[in-house]
Image 1 (cartoon, protein in one colour):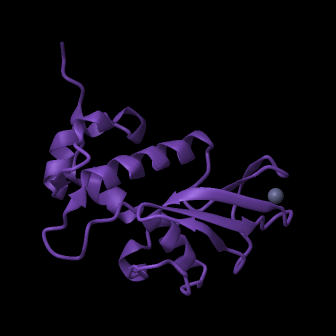
Image 2 (image 1 turned 90 degrees about the horizontal axis):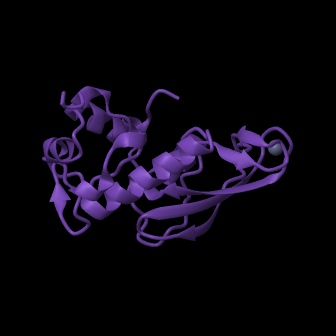
Length: 162
Ligand SMILES: [Zn+2]
């Protein structure tokens, strides 16, 4: 009956059902609700989990966190990195050719991006959490993202290691 260690919990084992879609959470509240450490949540933030705005303390929508966790888990399943697409020609995750990204569809929570495989030139597309998709655009130097509402980019703070 040892309780699972809080620090050992991974993205895959986090129980998203413990979040309420209509609630808002601070970082410590998210950590508490999901049974992970505060540094883990900060790490998610660096990986693209987006707060409601820049006001401190940062607040996160339960619904947005759930969606982000779903997408993060899905991309992990296909072994795509946070900025990779699955290329059906190469049959492995690939990065998009620089400058080739286009927005196919945008909602408040997700971005469907298309690009061309850096390796074979094949067409690739994938859904990203909105923040992750915008961060990818920013890294590729494509800041002219035509999304209604034009959310502000946080290139300097969102840029994680690789
Ligand atoms: Zn390819």
